[in-house]
View 1 (cartoon, one colour):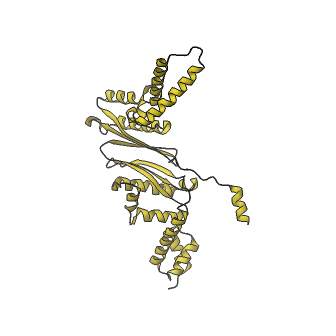
View 2: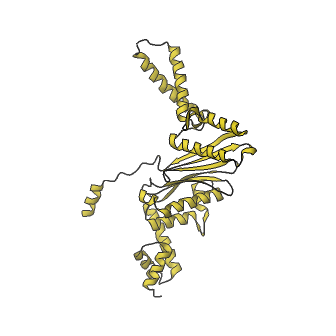
View 3: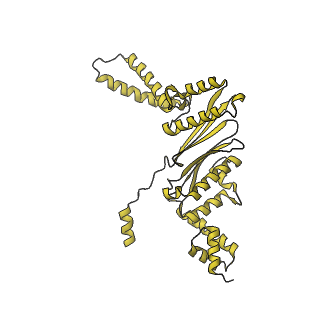
Amino acid sequence: MAFTAADVKKLREITNVGMMDCKKALTESDGDFDKAIELLREKGLAKAAKKADRIAAEGVVCAKVCADCGVGAIIEVNSETDFVAKNADFQQFVSDLADVVMKEAPADVDGLKDCKMGELTVQQALQEKVLTIGENIQIRRFERFDDSTINVAYNHMGGVIGVLVGLTVSDNLKGNDTVRELAKDIGMQAAAMNPSFLDKSDVDEATLAKEREILLAQALEENKSAAKPKPEQIIHKMVDGRVGKYYEENCLLQQAFVKENKVSVEQHIAAVAKELGGEIKLTRCVRFEKGEGIEKKVDDFAAEVASMAK
């Protein structure tokens, strides 16, 4: 079956794939549109496999809450370049994935890939993005908060950092705008201060023991050079005080509230609850930062140019 330049253009508009790839697909499918699209998807699978070993450390974090059901989700999807991460189509894809997480409640990333996204599975949609964008794209992680908490999303720097906050409140405070504003402030706090734990009770014994060991070694070293060395029991009391400082720096509820640093986040929440005549508890808070923990590839531009010249 013959095909025309208009057919190639039409296939390109449908798939967002380059002209030459569309022409080849139509040639191989003998002008059959459906088969051509299938062939392009198959080539997308091949491209995805080839690109899978390339480091995807850029991308977007998206936190959002369903306006109708109150369920919240936060997701990180990585790309190879910041250029792709800023693409509106890519950002919409990440937002749509967050919608799938909210609706389908998958257990993990593999489960998410099996979920439906329109007429395709998420895995198929992901492969199509690799085909059209030409980069390795990876769904890295996500979290979902059900509607048992009042959920508020906070996004910072255009998807560099996202925070999802879940508050448990008394019935008389559900739907309260001040409560939502409080949750947003907590999200801003988490984005800015990057706490390691929600509460000091969440710090595990191994972490605490290691921190005490470091603080004790520092205190003993300082004591050696002190004009008046302190007794050992005083040194241990100093360490106890510094552990309290560790909590204030690393635990969200014990951190100084960014908008009023004379009180802690915990104290601020209690003050708002008292003012509103109800109960408020910070139940969950998840913070994702784009690419954190991923080793980025450092390109040697001169070597790349030299290799192309050979």
